[in-house]
Length: 88
Image (tube, rainbow, N blue to C red; front, side, top):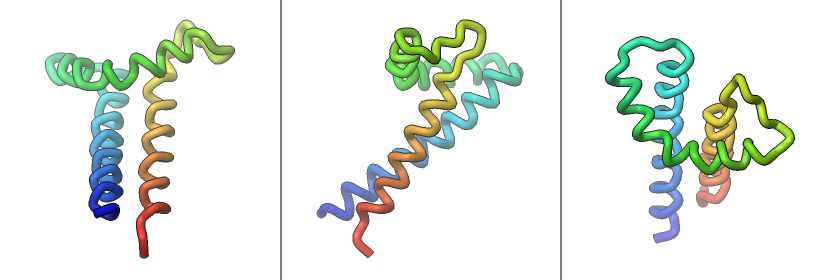
């Protein structure tokens, strides 16, 4: 049972990583505005807590939005944690 929970968590993190990669590409290289709007609607609930933490921290960069990159690093860490917790 435990292996299934870890597996679901791992695949969730992988899907979020792919969606976040697409979001980063579409935000920094603006093309396909309808897809960009859809990806903003999907990713904003995940990015909102990171943005609020960044706005209150020393790393507050007013011109550059670093929250997608930080969220990507957190998700990559989560997927690696799931791999480390899985029994071999």
